[in-house]
Image (cartoon, rainbow over all chains, first blue to last red; front, top):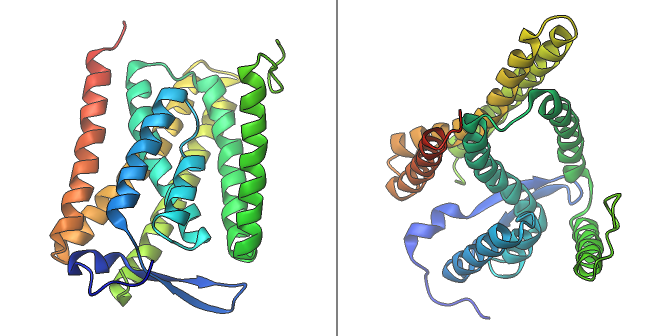
Length: 159
Length: 99
């Protein structure tokens, strides 16, 4: 899809650049096809809510393909979006008193440590390898879900 | 946000959120230790969880203030909408509380 004439000026504010340590210099990028991206994001949110799948696996390919963002930008943006949406539902559960501190506390600490480690890694790993890792994870998840659909549960103790 | 101000905002946000994550982790860890001896520890842990839940909300609030100050009204409106949705969600949850 070739570059059209000057796009609506309003969205140019979202263009950006980020420092990529593996390439050694800042990488400039711009948003493309925002309406398509928004439509797909809506679908991703819908599917995620209906099926209970983590929305990251749907949002990152959307950003990668429809918006044509670099993979690290997609990953970081997805994390941010999920943080906000999780905060919204987390606040709701919290105010209903549904969160058990004895369980939530340690889980949270472990998650934070993992997230910090992962965030540091994301700068060091080359973009293409990150994309491959994502595809591999997606494939594994798909396999697990397909098996679960036929009653074979790999993750839990009970069949 | 390609301007220098945008980058400075990003750095400040990162520091703020990083600090918040440390505070939250500290509260949760302290609560856990206290809970080994006193029941109030569970409430402290819950407070730590609340800190974490607030962090993304705080981020959006800071972004809203930044957009408004720089008169980028479209983005400010989006940020405000996100905050409103979270607030409505919280109010509805509180109203539907069981016990």
